[in-house]
Amino acid sequence: MFGVSVMSEAVSKLRLVFADDELPAREKLTHQLSLMDNIDVVGIATNGKEAISLINELQPDVALLDIQMPEINGLELVDLLNHQPLIIYTTAYDQFAIEAFEYASVDYLLKPFPIARLKKALAKAQQQLAQQQAVIQVNNGSDKAQYELSDNKLNKLISKSGERIFLLSPADIKFIKSEQGNSFAHDGKALHHLSDTLDQLEHSLSSQNFVRIHRSYLVNVDHIKEIQRWFNGKLMVIINDEEKSELSTSRAGADKLKQLLKI
Image (cartoon, rainbow, N blue to C red):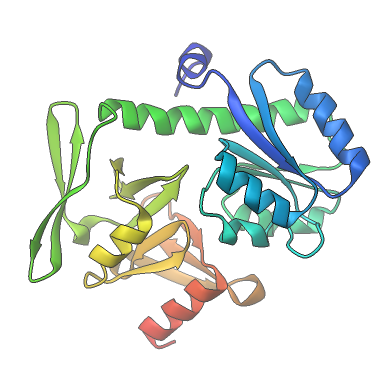
């Protein structure tokens, strides 16, 4: 675990965008955040469309999103982002809690929330960001995913960590996730940082039983333990690792998985 001193060095300030369509909520949140020295509010959106534009342009570390907004709500807009920040959801309705965590959010704040609860959620985000940066720093910030190609088939993923080079067999990788624009391969034991985007990896691994179930997840079908029907036509995918990792599909990802598995 990272101590406070490590986190403060790795992540001095969290760059944050927040979105809420209600003026009183925006004013209250602006005041709460102004009392926190470790937060830099770089953008404020009044609806989902503005949030998408600000997040893609400003590339914040964290997005604090109200769920219920006109036209595009806080849950829907995540699938429309080019830049993927850490997400904290806010809402006055607790029935959205399960769906919020389905979207791999850092936390979920039920309005009205006190500043102490907000600080706790942002501390979780800061810790996650520090952990991600630590992995990248171990790789000296310069590792590039390298591949051995034969007949357009990806045989090895190569990840550098300092003076060490790890050769990862695609067959051993359970899933690859994208966080903060970085890709991490999970082999059941550790996370391995890869510099290629999930889009690039999806293309390279297309012949290796990997399927894109969500904009943030690329899954090895051979390591799926169970599939459960979820909300709004989506699926919950359970991986056969020790943690029994649960990964939610998007609706499009669910259709891909159903087609691939003929279910």
